[in-house]
Each structure stands twice: as C-alpha cells, then as structure tokens.
Image 1: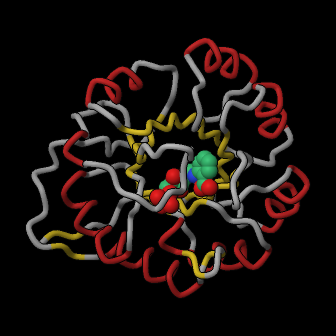
Image 2: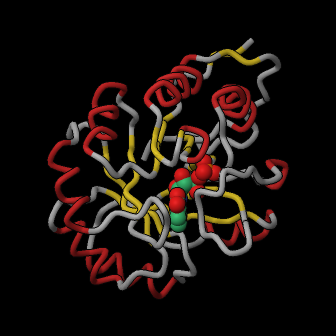
Image 3: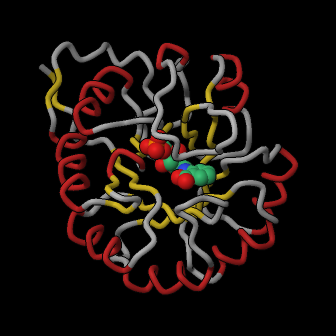
Length: 224
Ligand SMILES: O=C(O)c1ccccc1NCC(=O)[C@H](O)[C@H](O)COP(=O)(O)O
C-alpha cells in the first residue's frame, strides 16, 4: 500500500463565483479557466472577475486552443492568469513567440497517440506537459482516458489528465508518478462542478491509498 500525497491537483473548467468559493475552500493547487470554445468557456471579463475572488495561493491556468499569442500574453500581463496551457496545434514558433512576450510557466497539452509523440513534445519550449486523451472533434475535457501504457519516461514534470475519476486517481498516481493530476468531467453534475465530487477527488488524489503502487518509473514528479 502506498500513499499518494504530494501530487499537485488541477481542477479545470471553473466558471462561476461559487466554483471559486469551492476552490478557496478545498484548495487545489491549480484551477483552469477554459478560454477555448467549450461548454466550459469563460470570457475575459468573467475570468478577470473570478480571479479577483480566487485565493492567491491557487494558481489560475488559462486553457487555450490556437489563440493569438498577444491575447494570451495580455491575460498574463494583466494578472488574469498565472500560467498558460496550450491545448491546440501551437508549434515551436508559436511557443517561442509567446515566451518572448510573457514569462509565466507554460503547460503543453499532448493528446496522446504514441510514446514518440510525447517525447517529441517534451523538446518544445515548455515547463510542463499535460498528457490527455485524443478524441475526434474535441480538444479536451472529454472525460475519456487514454492508454496509460503510452506514457514514456519523461524528464519534464507532467500532469496526468483524461478521464480521471475519484475511484481511480490514487492508483493512477501511485503507478505513473505524475507531477500533477488534472480533471474536469468526472467532477461535474449537470455541467457544473459539484462540490461533493471535488472534495472527494482532492481527498483521494492527495491522501488516498492504492494497492500495488508502481515502481515510479515515469517520474515527472519534480518541482520546477
Ligand atoms: O475542458 C474543456 O472543455 C476543454 C476544451 C478545450 C480544450 C481543453 C479543455 N480542457 C482541458 C483540460 O485541462 C481538462 O481538464 C482535461 O482535458 C481533462 O478533462 P477530463 O477528461 O474531462 O477530466
């Protein structure tokens, strides 16, 4: 039996003041504002208002799909977000441009299809990877898991995402040793984050026990 605390938790897709109150109460390490087209999308004004309500110890991550880098950098400069998550087709050139405009940490999302694809994404100018599920027609937040056996050994810290659930998160953390876990769909009821589900997930991710924890072969667990 192995304990899983120490893993960082990102809860994605917060969009109402009550979601922020919930975050302030249960203190995930990161919350995500989805600026990309999605049922969870927030606009700049909403995110700005929500950020003023957020406990400053919790880092706000802006989630983007092929957004103009100037828009992304503007949100960073104005303190609406503390970190950037790139979830679209943004390439090295885009990421270098962004790096020249803002110095906030960048998470590169990879919708995993192969080990080689993940290893090549690790070479991009980013601080973290986020390993998520490839689904046709959506960029993220699908609630579906990918084949975790495709996770290679990585030097960069990574977030494990895609279909994580309260019942399985502790085992996934023990087995794959990510720096953090990222979740959205399984914590919703009627399309909004459910306070009871969020509380249970955080408890399971941070303090859960799982039988047969793995050997920690895919570290990714260092702090930047
Ligand atoms: O959540 C969305 O609606 C979304 C839309 C477009 C791009 C990215 C999106 N979410 C990114 C996330 O970080 C999600 O938390 C991640 O994909 C995991 O989601 P889930 O499988 O639902 O737990």
